[in-house]
Image 1 (cartoon, one colour):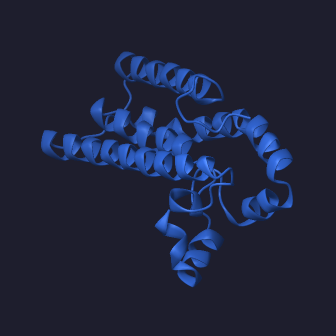
Image 2 (cartoon, helix red, strand yellow; image 1 turned 90 degrees about the horizontal axis):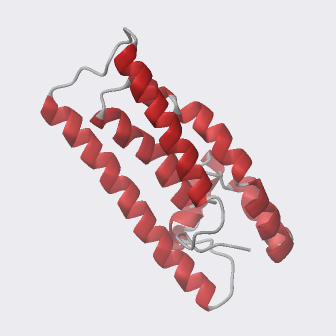
Length: 169
C-alpha cells in the first residue's frame, strides 16, 4: 500500500497527468472558441489564484506532517486534514489546483473541469481505498462512512465540533 504523498507510486502521478491534460485541453478550447472568460481585474484574479495556491500548499504540508506522524507509529491517519477528508492531498490538487489554474488562465471551462476530474480521481483512488480497507479493516470502513474522499462531509464537520482534538494532528 502506498500512502506517501510524493513517492512516485499511487495515483498522484496519474491523477496529476490527467488533470494537467484536461486543463490544457480546456485552456486550448477557451482560446480557440468564443467561450466566456472569467472577467476579474488582474489584482482579484491573481489574488484568488494565490489564495487557492496557498490553500493547496497549506493542505499538502498539514497532511504530509500528519501522515508522516501516523506512519511512524504505524496507525491510520485520522487527525489533521484527515479528520475532514480521507485524501486531503489529492483533494488539494483536485480542487485548489483546478481553481488556481482557472484563475491564472481566466477560464470558466477549467473551473468546470473539476466535475469530471472529481469523477476520474474518485475512480483512481479506489485501489488505495481497497488497500486501506484490507490494512485497517472496520476502522477504515467506519472512518470512510463519515469522512468524504476529497471534500468534507457534514458528518465529519459535525464530528469535529463534538471532538475538537481531531484537528491537533
